[in-house]
Length: 468
Length: 162
Image (cartoon, rainbow over all chains, first blue to last red; front, side, top):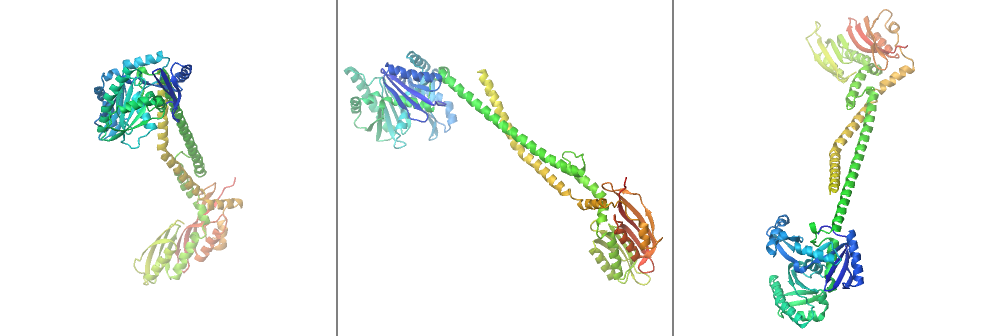
C-alpha cells in the first residue's frame, strides 16, 4: 500500500460488536470504541470517522472477509526481487481455488531467502470484494482500505510482542466472533494461515461440541506440523480476539490441544481489539495491503492521491523554478563579473592603444601600440641616456691609446662598431677585444697580416649585446 | 485527468530545464573562470606596461615645463669648441616622434680636428636642453696622433610652436 495517512481508523464489526481504533503515523493505535455496534455512541463515533475518511484527512480500514481471503506464502526460484515480481501472479494462481485473473491480489514485501525470493500474498475474488463493499455501504460505512485480516493480525503481534529469537516458532489464534484464524510463523515471518469456519463463542451444547470437534481435528495437526516444519520442540501460542477474553473458552480450547505438544500459551494485550489496532496502524503508515485498488478504489483515496500528486508536481515545479532562478542569478552574476573585467581591460588597453580596441584583442593591440610607441620614444630614451655613444667613443679611444694601437678607421653607432688599425702585438688586439666585450660589444676580430713596419693589422667588428 | 497530465508535463519540462540549466552552469563554470583569469592576466600585463615610458614622459614634461622647445644652435657650439668654420653642419628633415615632438638630425662633418676638441663639441651639445646626442660617428685618424677627420650624426628633439 503506497503512501500513508496522518491518521487512520481501524474498524472491526462482527457478532454485533464494533471495535474502532485510531492511529497516527507517530503514535500507537488507541481504541476509541469497543462495544455494541448499534449504540448511539457507536453510530456517532463511526460517523465521525466516516466524515474524516470522506474528506480525505484520515483512512478508514476494515478487514476483507477472512473466509473469502486466501493467504499464501510464495517462493520464486530467483534471488532477484525484480524477476520474482514477474512470476508472483503465476505462482499464486496455482495456489488459488479460483483464477488469479478473477481476483484482486496483493503481495507483501519480498525477501531474499536461500537462493530464492519469498513473499506473502493475499487474494480475494473480485465478486467477493464487490459484495463486501456493498455490505459496508449498506451498513453505513465505506472503508477506504480493505486489508487482509491474517496479515494484519500477524504483523500487529510482531509489533506489540516481538519474538525473543529471530527464528522462534510461534502461532496466533484469533478467536473472532464468527470464525477462528490460526496464523503460524517463524519469528516475524508468516508461514501459513488456517481458517476454522465456526464461531468459538456460539452458545448451546450442540454448537459447542461441533466446534470442539472441529478444533480438536484441525489444531493438533496444524501445530504439530508447524513444529515439524520449523524443526522445533516447542512454540509460543498467542491468543487474541473477542474469544480470548473468555477464560473458560480459552481454557477449554487449550485442554483440547494434544498434550504431547510443548506449547507456551500467552494472551496479547487487549486481545479483542488487536485487529482494529492492526488495521489502523497499517493504514496510517501505509505498510499494509489494500484490496480497494483500481476500479475498487475509494473515491476519497483517489482524491487524496490526486492532491498528493498535485502537491508533488507543484513542489517539483517550484523547486525547478527556484533552481532556474538560481541559475539565472548565477548567469547574471557571471555576466556582470565578465563585464566588469572587460570594462577594466578595455579602459587599460585604450590608455595605451587608443580609443579603438577590439574585444578579445586587447593584449595584442596593446603590444602593437607598444611597439609603435617604443619606436616613437626612442629619441627620448637616447636623450636620457647618461652615457650614450659619446661615452662609448671616449672609452674606445682611451682603450686604443692605452694599448698603443694605431686606429685607421673607427665607426661607431648604438648597434655596431667597426675598427681597423694596427697593433704592436696580437695580444694587444686581444686585450682591446676584451675591453670592448666588457663595454657590451660582441666582438669578432681578424688579423689580416702585418704592416710595412711589422705591426699586426687588425679588423674588429662588434655588435651591441643590448640596444643603446 | 488531461489537465493533470498537462500540469505534470509542464512540471517535468521545468525540471528538465532546471537540470539542463544546472548542467550547463556546472560544465561552463571552468570555461568562465578561464575567461576571467585570462582577462585578469591581460589586465595585469597591460597595467604593468602602462608606466613603460614613465622616464620618457617625465623628460618630455620637463622640456615642456621649461619651454625648451628648440635644441641649441650647433653652429655657435661648434665655433666655441672646435673653431669657427671647422665644422660643416647639414640638417636633415625632421621625423615625427611621440606626443607632438619631432626628431631632428644633423650631419656633422669635421675634415680635420683634434679628437679632444671634437669630443668637447659633442659633450657641449649633449649638455643642452633638449640635448644634441651622438647617433653615429666615423673617425679616420690622420698621421698626427689624436686627430683626423670625422663624420657624425647628431640627434635632438624639437617641438614646433604655433
